Amino acid sequence: MTRANLSSGNGEKKMDFEKYVEDRFYKTAVFCGENGRCITKLENMGFRVGQGLIERFTKDTARFKDELDIMKFICKDFWTTVFKKQIDNLRTNHQGIYVLQDNKFRLLTQMSAGKQYLEHASKYLAFTCGLIRGGLSNLGIKSIVTAEVSSMPACKFQ
Image (tube, rainbow, N blue to C red; front, side, top):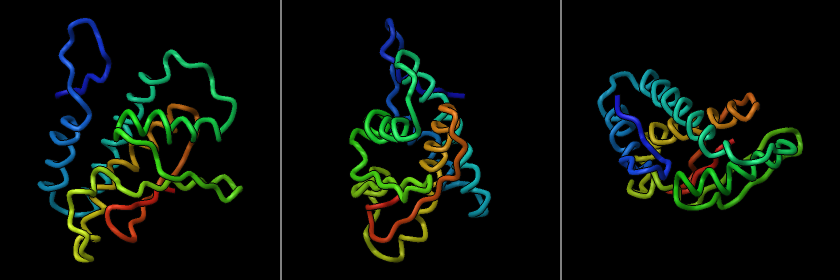
């Protein structure tokens, strides 16, 4: 099993996140059979990766005060490290549900904007839903993360 080494270590071979996603994610999205099983597998992969990344990214940071601080960390630091840009918008309904909006989601930018491709977007979002859920899990927040695409390449994670 190949692992991504995202730390800047002492002479260690560094593999960036995009290469890791390409190796694991795209192969799973394209080659697994049944769509529901495929999405579950991708979401579970994302969960494990999210747990590991959060563990590395937060090992030298102070504890977070509350849920909002955790969500700000996810939107700024975590998202920037993983996708090389911050989340465009973070909102809440003041009942514990946060909505993260990315107007140019990196995994969808290469797909055509046609409506026929919207059905395939779920495969590309399942991994990221798991990534967020795994990160939040390691920070002590149990969550259900869903994704929504109304127009490509913008998406919302709740």
